[in-house]
Length: 179
Image (cartoon, rainbow, N blue to C red; front, side, top):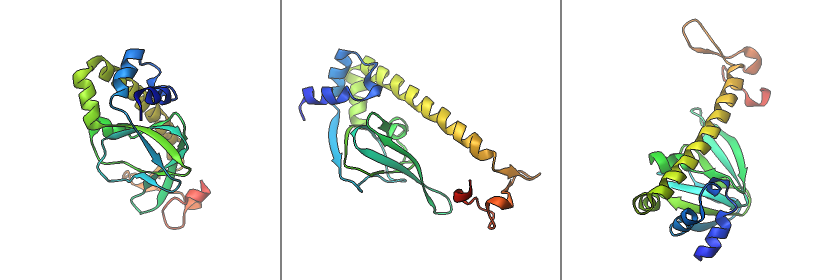
C-alpha cells in the first residue's frame, strides 16, 4: 500500500493524533496493512507477540480463557482502537485471543519495525511510546474499575481464600450469568 494511502488511514487512529506531520511520515515507512475476514483469528492467547494493531474498519472481540478453561469475551472493539500494545512493548506472549467478528481492516507495526523507528527516528519512537503508555494507562484504569466491581461479589475467608457466596454458584465457582 502506498505511503500516502497509509497516512490517510493513520488519520483514522486516535493514537496518532499527537504525532506531527514528519512523525507520521516516519511511521508510514514502517506500518503495514492487513485484512481479516469475519471469523478470522488475528492472534491467539499464548502465542508469541510483538505486533501492534490499529483497527481502521470492522469489529473484533477480545477473548480470554480462564484457568477453568472457560472462554469469556472481555471486550469488543471497532474503528480507531489499538490492540496488541503490551506485546510490542514487553515482547511477551499474547494475553488474549483477538477474533474478527466482522470483516476488519487493520494497520500494524511489528517489533522489528518499531526498533528501527527508535533507531532511525528516536523522537517519533518516543512520541509513539508515550501514546502507547497513555493508552495502556487508560485501559488499566478501566480494568481496575471492573475488578473492583467484580470483587464486590467475591469474599475472602480468614485465611485469604476466596469464598464465593452460594447465591452465585452451587459449585463454588462464579456463575457469570448470575452476576
